[in-house]
Length: 52
Image (cartoon, rainbow, N blue to C red; front, top):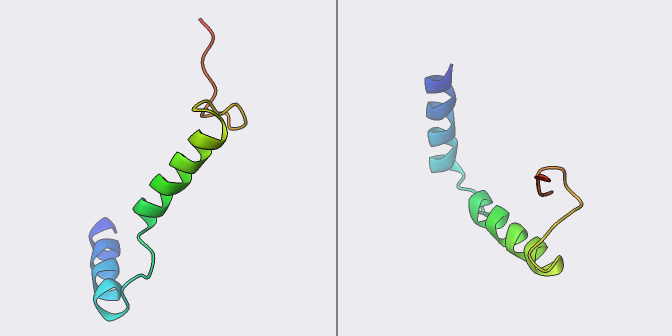
């Protein structure tokens, strides 16, 4: 199934390329979030520090 999915993505990418690079968008959003929280986000469970 993975091969079929990859092949389909490749075909769609050739016919209708994406307007937004999702990886770049994710990096920009993450950078923006880090700046908004002074480098430390406590809103999302995945961002919270694990107490020692």
